[in-house]
Image 1: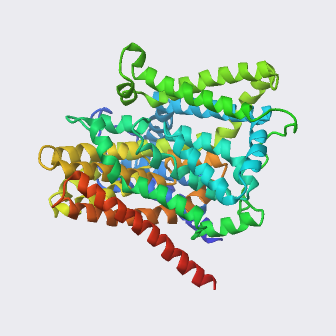
Image 2: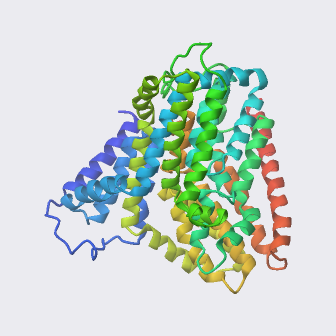
Length: 545
Protein backbone atom coordinates (compact mmCIF):
# COMPACT_ATOMS: atom_id res chain seq x y z
CA UNK A 1 0.00 0.00 0.00
CA UNK A 2 1.42 3.42 -0.94
CA UNK A 3 2.21 6.05 1.68
CA UNK A 4 -0.67 8.27 0.53
CA UNK A 5 -3.17 5.43 0.76
CA UNK A 6 -1.87 4.46 4.21
CA UNK A 7 -2.34 8.02 5.46
CA UNK A 8 -5.85 8.20 4.01
CA UNK A 9 -6.80 4.74 5.32
CA UNK A 10 -5.45 5.53 8.79
CA UNK A 11 -7.37 8.80 8.93
CA UNK A 12 -10.60 7.14 7.82
CA UNK A 13 -10.13 4.39 10.41
CA UNK A 14 -9.62 6.98 13.14
CA UNK A 15 -12.77 8.79 12.03
CA UNK A 16 -14.71 5.53 12.14
CA UNK A 17 -13.61 4.91 15.69
CA UNK A 18 -14.53 8.44 16.70
CA UNK A 19 -17.93 8.33 15.01
CA UNK A 20 -19.05 4.94 16.19
CA UNK A 21 -17.47 4.99 19.66
CA UNK A 22 -20.66 6.51 20.97
CA UNK A 23 -23.99 5.69 19.34
CA UNK A 24 -26.01 7.51 21.95
CA UNK A 25 -28.84 9.74 20.77
CA UNK A 26 -27.89 13.35 20.44
CA UNK A 27 -29.93 14.97 23.15
CA UNK A 28 -28.51 18.18 24.52
CA UNK A 29 -29.63 21.64 25.41
CA UNK A 30 -31.28 23.89 22.84
CA UNK A 31 -29.05 24.91 19.94
CA UNK A 32 -28.83 28.50 21.14
CA UNK A 33 -27.40 27.36 24.48
CA UNK A 34 -25.28 24.45 23.31
CA UNK A 35 -21.51 24.88 23.66
CA UNK A 36 -19.21 21.97 22.72
CA UNK A 37 -16.59 20.88 25.24
CA UNK A 38 -13.77 21.83 22.84
CA UNK A 39 -15.15 25.31 22.14
CA UNK A 40 -12.55 28.12 21.81
CA UNK A 41 -9.61 25.75 22.36
CA UNK A 42 -6.69 24.81 20.12
CA UNK A 43 -8.76 21.82 18.99
CA UNK A 44 -11.00 24.20 17.03
CA UNK A 45 -8.16 24.60 14.51
CA UNK A 46 -7.57 20.86 14.07
CA UNK A 47 -10.26 20.25 11.35
CA UNK A 48 -8.81 22.73 8.83
CA UNK A 49 -5.25 21.71 9.65
CA UNK A 50 -6.09 18.05 9.00
CA UNK A 51 -7.87 18.94 5.73
CA UNK A 52 -4.91 21.02 4.55
CA UNK A 53 -2.36 18.39 5.57
CA UNK A 54 -4.25 15.58 3.84
CA UNK A 55 -4.72 17.64 0.68
CA UNK A 56 -0.99 18.29 0.43
CA UNK A 57 -0.07 14.65 1.21
CA UNK A 58 -2.67 12.78 -0.84
CA UNK A 59 -3.07 15.38 -3.63
CA UNK A 60 -6.83 14.75 -3.40
CA UNK A 61 -8.93 17.75 -2.42
CA UNK A 62 -12.51 16.53 -2.08
CA UNK A 63 -11.94 13.68 0.38
CA UNK A 64 -9.42 15.75 2.38
CA UNK A 65 -11.90 18.58 2.86
CA UNK A 66 -14.69 16.16 3.75
CA UNK A 67 -12.54 14.41 6.36
CA UNK A 68 -11.75 17.78 7.94
CA UNK A 69 -15.47 18.59 7.97
CA UNK A 70 -16.26 15.24 9.65
CA UNK A 71 -13.65 15.83 12.34
CA UNK A 72 -15.19 19.26 13.01
CA UNK A 73 -18.61 17.62 13.34
CA UNK A 74 -17.23 14.99 15.74
CA UNK A 75 -15.64 17.65 17.95
CA UNK A 76 -18.77 19.80 17.92
CA UNK A 77 -21.09 16.94 18.91
CA UNK A 78 -18.74 15.74 21.65
CA UNK A 79 -18.16 12.47 19.75
CA UNK A 80 -21.83 11.56 19.26
CA UNK A 81 -22.85 9.94 15.98
CA UNK A 82 -26.22 11.54 15.35
CA UNK A 83 -25.05 14.98 16.40
CA UNK A 84 -22.07 14.70 14.04
CA UNK A 85 -24.19 13.80 11.01
CA UNK A 86 -26.78 16.49 11.72
CA UNK A 87 -24.17 19.20 12.27
CA UNK A 88 -22.12 18.27 9.18
CA UNK A 89 -25.00 18.05 6.72
CA UNK A 90 -27.76 20.24 8.12
CA UNK A 91 -25.81 23.01 9.84
CA UNK A 92 -22.73 22.71 7.63
CA UNK A 93 -23.42 21.88 3.99
CA UNK A 94 -27.08 22.89 3.81
CA UNK A 95 -26.41 25.97 5.94
CA UNK A 96 -23.53 27.04 3.66
CA UNK A 97 -25.52 26.52 0.47
CA UNK A 98 -28.59 28.34 1.78
CA UNK A 99 -26.54 31.33 2.95
CA UNK A 100 -27.59 34.23 0.73
CA UNK A 101 -24.04 35.59 0.35
CA UNK A 102 -22.63 32.20 -0.67
CA UNK A 103 -25.50 31.56 -3.07
CA UNK A 104 -24.93 34.93 -4.74
CA UNK A 105 -21.27 34.02 -5.31
CA UNK A 106 -22.27 30.64 -6.79
CA UNK A 107 -24.74 32.32 -9.17
CA UNK A 108 -22.02 34.78 -10.20
CA UNK A 109 -19.62 31.86 -10.74
CA UNK A 110 -22.09 29.96 -12.92
CA UNK A 111 -23.00 33.02 -15.02
CA UNK A 112 -19.33 33.75 -15.53
CA UNK A 113 -18.76 30.16 -16.66
CA UNK A 114 -21.64 30.51 -19.13
CA UNK A 115 -20.23 33.78 -20.50
CA UNK A 116 -16.78 32.24 -20.94
CA UNK A 117 -18.40 29.38 -22.87
CA UNK A 118 -20.23 31.92 -25.05
CA UNK A 119 -17.00 33.84 -25.73
CA UNK A 120 -15.34 30.59 -26.81
CA UNK A 121 -18.24 29.50 -29.02
CA UNK A 122 -18.52 32.94 -30.61
CA UNK A 123 -14.82 32.82 -31.45
CA UNK A 124 -13.90 35.80 -29.28
CA UNK A 125 -11.27 33.93 -27.26
CA UNK A 126 -9.68 32.46 -30.38
CA UNK A 127 -9.65 35.87 -32.09
CA UNK A 128 -8.07 37.49 -29.05
CA UNK A 129 -5.48 34.71 -29.01
CA UNK A 130 -4.64 35.45 -32.66
CA UNK A 131 -4.45 39.19 -31.97
CA UNK A 132 -2.29 38.66 -28.89
CA UNK A 133 0.06 36.35 -30.79
CA UNK A 134 0.76 39.22 -33.18
CA UNK A 135 1.38 41.78 -30.43
CA UNK A 136 2.75 39.68 -27.55
CA UNK A 137 5.92 38.07 -28.83
CA UNK A 138 7.38 36.32 -25.78
CA UNK A 139 6.65 34.33 -22.61
CA UNK A 140 7.73 37.36 -20.58
CA UNK A 141 5.31 39.59 -22.47
CA UNK A 142 2.44 37.13 -21.97
CA UNK A 143 3.06 36.98 -18.21
CA UNK A 144 3.47 40.75 -17.87
CA UNK A 145 0.22 41.29 -19.79
CA UNK A 146 -1.53 38.89 -17.39
CA UNK A 147 -0.15 40.80 -14.40
CA UNK A 148 -1.26 44.12 -15.90
CA UNK A 149 -4.79 42.88 -16.55
CA UNK A 150 -4.95 41.45 -13.02
CA UNK A 151 -3.92 44.81 -11.53
CA UNK A 152 -6.49 46.66 -13.66
CA UNK A 153 -9.37 44.42 -12.54
CA UNK A 154 -9.27 45.45 -8.88
CA UNK A 155 -12.99 45.57 -8.11
CA UNK A 156 -13.34 42.09 -6.63
CA UNK A 157 -11.06 39.07 -6.24
CA UNK A 158 -13.58 36.51 -7.52
CA UNK A 159 -14.24 38.62 -10.58
CA UNK A 160 -10.50 39.11 -11.03
CA UNK A 161 -9.63 35.40 -10.88
CA UNK A 162 -12.16 34.19 -13.41
CA UNK A 163 -11.99 37.12 -15.83
CA UNK A 164 -8.19 37.25 -16.03
CA UNK A 165 -8.07 33.49 -16.45
CA UNK A 166 -10.59 33.34 -19.26
CA UNK A 167 -9.03 36.27 -21.15
CA UNK A 168 -5.33 35.43 -20.79
CA UNK A 169 -5.35 31.62 -20.83
CA UNK A 170 -5.21 31.35 -24.65
CA UNK A 171 -2.31 33.82 -24.71
CA UNK A 172 -0.22 32.10 -22.02
CA UNK A 173 -0.94 28.69 -23.55
CA UNK A 174 0.35 29.88 -26.91
CA UNK A 175 3.61 31.04 -25.29
CA UNK A 176 3.99 27.82 -23.25
CA UNK A 177 3.45 29.33 -19.82
CA UNK A 178 2.53 26.54 -17.41
CA UNK A 179 -1.00 26.47 -16.02
CA UNK A 180 0.55 26.50 -12.52
CA UNK A 181 2.39 29.75 -13.28
CA UNK A 182 -0.78 31.28 -14.74
CA UNK A 183 -2.73 30.26 -11.62
CA UNK A 184 -0.07 31.87 -9.41
CA UNK A 185 -0.18 35.15 -11.34
CA UNK A 186 -3.99 35.19 -11.21
CA UNK A 187 -4.04 34.46 -7.47
CA UNK A 188 -1.30 37.01 -6.74
CA UNK A 189 -3.18 39.77 -8.58
CA UNK A 190 -6.53 38.99 -6.96
CA UNK A 191 -6.64 39.50 -3.19
CA UNK A 192 -3.26 41.33 -2.98
CA UNK A 193 -4.46 43.94 -5.50
CA UNK A 194 -8.00 44.22 -4.11
CA UNK A 195 -6.71 44.81 -0.56
CA UNK A 196 -4.80 47.93 -1.66
CA UNK A 197 -7.50 49.26 -4.03
CA UNK A 198 -9.68 51.96 -2.39
CA UNK A 199 -12.60 51.16 -4.71
CA UNK A 200 -13.10 47.44 -4.20
CA UNK A 201 -15.28 45.02 -2.29
CA UNK A 202 -12.33 44.39 0.05
CA UNK A 203 -11.94 48.06 0.95
CA UNK A 204 -15.65 48.13 1.70
CA UNK A 205 -15.29 45.13 4.02
CA UNK A 206 -12.28 46.55 5.88
CA UNK A 207 -13.84 49.95 6.47
CA UNK A 208 -16.85 48.22 7.96
CA UNK A 209 -14.68 46.58 10.64
CA UNK A 210 -13.05 49.84 11.82
CA UNK A 211 -15.71 50.97 14.25
CA UNK A 212 -15.48 54.35 15.93
CA UNK A 213 -12.93 55.66 13.40
CA UNK A 214 -12.94 57.02 9.84
CA UNK A 215 -12.56 53.60 8.25
CA UNK A 216 -11.96 54.76 4.69
CA UNK A 217 -9.29 57.28 5.72
CA UNK A 218 -7.51 54.63 7.79
CA UNK A 219 -7.66 52.20 4.87
CA UNK A 220 -5.97 54.76 2.58
CA UNK A 221 -3.27 55.52 5.15
CA UNK A 222 -2.64 51.80 5.71
CA UNK A 223 -1.91 51.06 2.03
CA UNK A 224 1.86 51.91 2.19
CA UNK A 225 2.17 49.49 5.15
CA UNK A 226 0.42 46.58 3.44
CA UNK A 227 3.77 44.95 2.76
CA UNK A 228 2.57 41.50 1.71
CA UNK A 229 0.29 42.88 -1.01
CA UNK A 230 2.82 45.41 -2.32
CA UNK A 231 5.79 43.03 -2.20
CA UNK A 232 3.79 40.29 -3.93
CA UNK A 233 3.40 42.61 -6.93
CA UNK A 234 7.13 43.43 -6.80
CA UNK A 235 7.93 39.71 -6.67
CA UNK A 236 5.70 38.83 -9.61
CA UNK A 237 7.30 41.41 -11.88
CA UNK A 238 10.81 40.44 -10.75
CA UNK A 239 10.45 36.69 -11.27
CA UNK A 240 8.87 37.23 -14.69
CA UNK A 241 11.41 39.75 -15.97
CA UNK A 242 14.44 37.90 -14.57
CA UNK A 243 12.99 34.41 -15.25
CA UNK A 244 13.37 33.23 -11.65
CA UNK A 245 11.65 29.91 -10.94
CA UNK A 246 12.21 27.72 -7.90
CA UNK A 247 10.49 25.01 -5.89
CA UNK A 248 7.88 22.82 -7.61
CA UNK A 249 7.11 25.69 -10.01
CA UNK A 250 10.50 25.24 -11.68
CA UNK A 251 9.58 21.75 -12.94
CA UNK A 252 6.23 23.01 -14.27
CA UNK A 253 7.91 25.86 -16.14
CA UNK A 254 10.65 23.62 -17.57
CA UNK A 255 8.02 21.19 -18.84
CA UNK A 256 5.89 24.04 -20.21
CA UNK A 257 8.78 25.30 -22.34
CA UNK A 258 8.97 21.78 -23.78
CA UNK A 259 5.24 21.88 -24.59
CA UNK A 260 3.62 20.30 -21.51
CA UNK A 261 1.74 23.08 -19.69
CA UNK A 262 0.19 20.69 -17.14
CA UNK A 263 3.15 18.49 -15.96
CA UNK A 264 0.95 16.07 -13.98
CA UNK A 265 -1.28 13.37 -15.55
CA UNK A 266 -4.36 15.19 -14.28
CA UNK A 267 -5.28 17.73 -16.97
CA UNK A 268 -8.50 19.44 -15.95
CA UNK A 269 -10.48 21.10 -18.74
CA UNK A 270 -7.88 19.95 -21.31
CA UNK A 271 -10.66 19.39 -23.87
CA UNK A 272 -13.12 21.91 -22.45
CA UNK A 273 -12.77 24.61 -25.09
CA UNK A 274 -15.19 24.44 -27.98
CA UNK A 275 -13.85 24.22 -31.50
CA UNK A 276 -14.66 27.37 -33.46
CA UNK A 277 -14.28 28.28 -37.09
CA UNK A 278 -11.21 30.35 -37.89
CA UNK A 279 -13.28 33.05 -39.59
CA UNK A 280 -15.97 33.20 -36.89
CA UNK A 281 -15.91 35.99 -34.35
CA UNK A 282 -13.50 38.80 -33.66
CA UNK A 283 -11.64 40.38 -30.76
CA UNK A 284 -14.70 42.54 -30.07
CA UNK A 285 -16.60 39.35 -29.21
CA UNK A 286 -14.37 38.97 -26.16
CA UNK A 287 -13.70 42.62 -25.32
CA UNK A 288 -17.34 43.73 -25.34
CA UNK A 289 -18.71 41.05 -22.96
CA UNK A 290 -15.80 41.57 -20.55
CA UNK A 291 -16.32 45.35 -20.62
CA UNK A 292 -20.07 44.84 -20.10
CA UNK A 293 -19.29 42.56 -17.17
CA UNK A 294 -17.00 45.13 -15.54
CA UNK A 295 -19.43 48.02 -16.00
CA UNK A 296 -22.48 46.02 -14.89
CA UNK A 297 -20.69 44.65 -11.81
CA UNK A 298 -19.59 48.14 -10.76
CA UNK A 299 -23.16 49.39 -11.20
CA UNK A 300 -24.48 46.36 -9.32
CA UNK A 301 -22.15 46.97 -6.38
CA UNK A 302 -22.89 50.67 -6.03
CA UNK A 303 -26.60 49.88 -6.43
CA UNK A 304 -26.45 47.62 -3.36
CA UNK A 305 -24.65 50.42 -1.51
CA UNK A 306 -27.48 52.89 -2.15
CA UNK A 307 -25.83 55.00 -4.86
CA UNK A 308 -29.10 55.46 -6.76
CA UNK A 309 -30.81 56.57 -3.57
CA UNK A 310 -28.49 59.54 -3.07
CA UNK A 311 -25.45 57.96 -1.41
CA UNK A 312 -22.04 59.13 -2.64
CA UNK A 313 -19.98 56.88 -4.93
CA UNK A 314 -17.25 56.09 -2.37
CA UNK A 315 -19.73 55.56 0.43
CA UNK A 316 -21.85 53.34 -1.82
CA UNK A 317 -18.82 51.16 -2.45
CA UNK A 318 -18.14 51.04 1.29
CA UNK A 319 -21.71 49.92 1.96
CA UNK A 320 -21.98 47.55 -1.01
CA UNK A 321 -22.90 43.88 -0.87
CA UNK A 322 -20.37 42.24 -3.18
CA UNK A 323 -22.34 39.02 -3.51
CA UNK A 324 -25.59 40.66 -4.62
CA UNK A 325 -23.79 43.28 -6.73
CA UNK A 326 -21.74 40.72 -8.64
CA UNK A 327 -24.75 38.45 -9.11
CA UNK A 328 -26.92 41.25 -10.52
CA UNK A 329 -24.09 42.67 -12.62
CA UNK A 330 -23.18 39.32 -14.15
CA UNK A 331 -26.82 38.58 -15.00
CA UNK A 332 -27.31 41.86 -16.88
CA UNK A 333 -23.95 41.41 -18.63
CA UNK A 334 -25.12 37.93 -19.67
CA UNK A 335 -28.33 39.33 -21.16
CA UNK A 336 -26.44 42.13 -22.94
CA UNK A 337 -23.97 39.58 -24.37
CA UNK A 338 -26.79 37.41 -25.74
CA UNK A 339 -28.27 40.42 -27.56
CA UNK A 340 -24.83 41.56 -28.76
CA UNK A 341 -23.95 38.17 -30.24
CA UNK A 342 -27.40 37.86 -31.85
CA UNK A 343 -27.09 41.31 -33.48
CA UNK A 344 -23.60 40.45 -34.76
CA UNK A 345 -24.92 37.05 -35.95
CA UNK A 346 -22.01 35.15 -34.44
CA UNK A 347 -24.29 33.26 -32.01
CA UNK A 348 -28.01 32.64 -32.33
CA UNK A 349 -30.23 32.73 -29.26
CA UNK A 350 -30.44 28.93 -29.19
CA UNK A 351 -26.64 28.64 -29.44
CA UNK A 352 -26.26 31.05 -26.52
CA UNK A 353 -28.71 29.00 -24.49
CA UNK A 354 -26.78 25.82 -25.26
CA UNK A 355 -23.86 27.41 -23.40
CA UNK A 356 -25.86 27.47 -20.15
CA UNK A 357 -25.40 23.78 -19.21
CA UNK A 358 -21.86 23.75 -20.64
CA UNK A 359 -20.81 26.77 -18.59
CA UNK A 360 -22.40 25.32 -15.47
CA UNK A 361 -20.63 22.01 -16.05
CA UNK A 362 -17.25 23.73 -16.39
CA UNK A 363 -17.71 25.34 -12.97
CA UNK A 364 -18.82 22.20 -11.08
CA UNK A 365 -15.31 21.39 -9.69
CA UNK A 366 -14.92 24.94 -8.34
CA UNK A 367 -18.46 24.92 -6.90
CA UNK A 368 -17.87 21.59 -5.17
CA UNK A 369 -14.59 22.68 -3.59
CA UNK A 370 -16.11 26.02 -2.56
CA UNK A 371 -19.04 24.24 -0.91
CA UNK A 372 -16.70 21.98 1.07
CA UNK A 373 -14.48 24.95 2.00
CA UNK A 374 -17.46 26.98 3.26
CA UNK A 375 -18.71 23.96 5.22
CA UNK A 376 -15.29 23.50 6.81
CA UNK A 377 -15.29 27.17 7.78
CA UNK A 378 -18.70 26.73 9.44
CA UNK A 379 -17.22 23.82 11.44
CA UNK A 380 -14.36 25.97 12.73
CA UNK A 381 -16.77 28.82 13.52
CA UNK A 382 -19.02 26.50 15.53
CA UNK A 383 -15.98 25.32 17.49
CA UNK A 384 -15.01 28.89 18.43
CA UNK A 385 -11.81 29.24 16.38
CA UNK A 386 -12.30 33.01 16.21
CA UNK A 387 -12.70 33.35 19.97
CA UNK A 388 -9.60 31.20 20.56
CA UNK A 389 -7.43 33.33 18.26
CA UNK A 390 -8.89 36.58 19.63
CA UNK A 391 -7.90 35.46 23.13
CA UNK A 392 -4.38 34.66 21.95
CA UNK A 393 -4.04 38.09 20.33
CA UNK A 394 -5.42 39.91 23.39
CA UNK A 395 -2.93 38.11 25.60
CA UNK A 396 -0.04 38.81 23.27
CA UNK A 397 -0.45 42.58 23.09
CA UNK A 398 1.16 43.08 26.46
CA UNK A 399 4.65 42.29 25.13
CA UNK A 400 7.19 44.58 23.51
CA UNK A 401 5.36 47.21 21.48
CA UNK A 402 7.74 47.12 18.53
CA UNK A 403 7.11 43.45 17.69
CA UNK A 404 3.31 43.74 17.75
CA UNK A 405 2.89 44.44 13.98
CA UNK A 406 5.01 41.41 13.08
CA UNK A 407 3.18 39.30 15.68
CA UNK A 408 -0.23 40.34 14.34
CA UNK A 409 0.96 39.58 10.80
CA UNK A 410 2.02 36.06 11.79
CA UNK A 411 -1.24 35.41 13.68
CA UNK A 412 -3.24 36.70 10.72
CA UNK A 413 -1.31 34.39 8.36
CA UNK A 414 -1.96 31.37 10.55
CA UNK A 415 -5.64 32.08 11.11
CA UNK A 416 -6.39 32.77 7.43
CA UNK A 417 -4.40 29.70 6.38
CA UNK A 418 -6.33 27.47 8.78
CA UNK A 419 -9.78 28.89 8.06
CA UNK A 420 -9.35 29.85 4.39
CA UNK A 421 -10.90 33.29 4.81
CA UNK A 422 -9.32 36.74 4.65
CA UNK A 423 -12.45 38.68 5.53
CA UNK A 424 -13.12 36.55 8.58
CA UNK A 425 -9.53 37.00 9.72
CA UNK A 426 -9.32 40.77 9.57
CA UNK A 427 -12.87 40.85 10.89
CA UNK A 428 -11.49 39.22 14.05
CA UNK A 429 -8.18 41.09 14.36
CA UNK A 430 -8.96 44.67 13.25
CA UNK A 431 -11.51 45.42 16.02
CA UNK A 432 -8.97 44.17 18.60
CA UNK A 433 -6.25 46.44 17.18
CA UNK A 434 -8.59 49.44 17.15
CA UNK A 435 -9.56 48.81 20.79
CA UNK A 436 -5.91 48.56 21.86
CA UNK A 437 -4.42 51.55 20.00
CA UNK A 438 -7.29 53.94 19.26
CA UNK A 439 -6.61 57.30 20.88
CA UNK A 440 -3.19 56.26 22.20
CA UNK A 441 -0.87 55.51 19.28
CA UNK A 442 -2.33 56.30 15.87
CA UNK A 443 0.77 55.31 13.90
CA UNK A 444 0.92 51.90 15.58
CA UNK A 445 -2.82 51.46 15.00
CA UNK A 446 -2.45 52.08 11.25
CA UNK A 447 0.61 49.80 10.96
CA UNK A 448 -1.12 47.05 12.95
CA UNK A 449 -4.33 47.31 10.90
CA UNK A 450 -2.27 46.93 7.74
CA UNK A 451 -0.54 43.92 9.37
CA UNK A 452 -4.00 42.41 10.00
CA UNK A 453 -4.93 42.85 6.33
CA UNK A 454 -1.56 41.67 5.03
CA UNK A 455 -1.55 38.58 7.27
CA UNK A 456 -5.11 37.73 6.27
CA UNK A 457 -4.27 38.00 2.55
CA UNK A 458 -1.04 36.01 3.00
CA UNK A 459 -2.75 33.14 4.83
CA UNK A 460 -5.59 33.20 2.33
CA UNK A 461 -3.06 33.15 -0.52
CA UNK A 462 -1.33 30.05 0.91
CA UNK A 463 -4.41 28.11 1.98
CA UNK A 464 -5.73 25.24 -0.19
CA UNK A 465 -9.23 25.80 1.24
CA UNK A 466 -9.36 29.52 0.45
CA UNK A 467 -12.10 30.49 -1.98
CA UNK A 468 -9.76 32.80 -3.92
CA UNK A 469 -7.17 30.01 -4.23
CA UNK A 470 -9.93 27.75 -5.56
CA UNK A 471 -11.13 30.47 -7.94
CA UNK A 472 -7.59 31.01 -9.26
CA UNK A 473 -7.29 27.29 -10.02
CA UNK A 474 -10.64 27.45 -11.83
CA UNK A 475 -9.68 30.61 -13.73
CA UNK A 476 -6.40 29.09 -14.91
CA UNK A 477 -8.06 25.69 -15.41
CA UNK A 478 -5.23 24.21 -13.38
CA UNK A 479 -5.19 21.21 -11.05
CA UNK A 480 -5.94 22.70 -7.63
CA UNK A 481 -3.25 20.83 -5.69
CA UNK A 482 -0.68 21.72 -8.37
CA UNK A 483 -1.57 25.38 -7.90
CA UNK A 484 -1.27 25.19 -4.11
CA UNK A 485 2.03 23.29 -4.06
CA UNK A 486 3.72 25.50 -6.66
CA UNK A 487 2.46 28.76 -5.17
CA UNK A 488 3.35 28.03 -1.54
CA UNK A 489 7.14 28.61 -1.75
CA UNK A 490 6.56 31.93 -3.54
CA UNK A 491 4.00 33.11 -0.99
CA UNK A 492 6.20 32.03 1.95
CA UNK A 493 9.14 33.99 0.48
CA UNK A 494 7.08 37.19 0.37
CA UNK A 495 5.69 36.46 3.85
CA UNK A 496 9.20 36.15 5.31
CA UNK A 497 10.32 39.47 3.83
CA UNK A 498 7.06 41.11 4.95
CA UNK A 499 7.55 39.84 8.51
CA UNK A 500 11.03 41.40 8.65
CA UNK A 501 9.67 44.66 7.26
CA UNK A 502 6.92 44.74 9.92
CA UNK A 503 9.59 44.28 12.60
CA UNK A 504 11.43 47.26 11.12
CA UNK A 505 8.21 49.31 11.02
CA UNK A 506 7.54 48.54 14.69
CA UNK A 507 11.00 49.84 15.59
CA UNK A 508 10.98 52.92 13.31
CA UNK A 509 7.54 54.12 14.49
CA UNK A 510 9.06 54.77 17.94
CA UNK A 511 10.89 57.84 16.62
CA UNK A 512 9.06 58.67 13.36
CA UNK A 513 5.51 59.55 12.36
CA UNK A 514 3.26 57.63 10.00
CA UNK A 515 4.52 59.25 6.78
CA UNK A 516 8.20 58.96 7.67
CA UNK A 517 7.83 55.33 8.78
CA UNK A 518 6.20 54.48 5.45
CA UNK A 519 8.89 56.38 3.52
CA UNK A 520 11.65 54.42 5.28
CA UNK A 521 10.23 50.90 5.55
CA UNK A 522 8.56 50.31 2.17
CA UNK A 523 11.71 51.00 0.08
CA UNK A 524 13.70 48.78 2.46
CA UNK A 525 11.13 46.02 2.01
CA UNK A 526 11.31 46.31 -1.79
CA UNK A 527 15.13 46.11 -1.73
CA UNK A 528 14.95 43.08 0.58
CA UNK A 529 12.42 41.41 -1.72
CA UNK A 530 14.47 41.87 -4.88
CA UNK A 531 17.68 40.93 -3.05
CA UNK A 532 16.13 37.75 -1.68
CA UNK A 533 15.01 36.69 -5.15
CA UNK A 534 18.49 37.33 -6.58
CA UNK A 535 20.01 35.17 -3.84
CA UNK A 536 17.47 32.41 -4.56
CA UNK A 537 18.32 32.56 -8.28
CA UNK A 538 22.03 32.33 -7.50
CA UNK A 539 21.51 29.32 -5.21
CA UNK A 540 19.26 27.46 -7.69
CA UNK A 541 21.70 28.12 -10.54
CA UNK A 542 24.57 26.69 -8.46
CA UNK A 543 22.50 23.60 -7.65
CA UNK A 544 21.91 23.02 -11.38
CA UNK A 545 25.57 23.53 -12.29
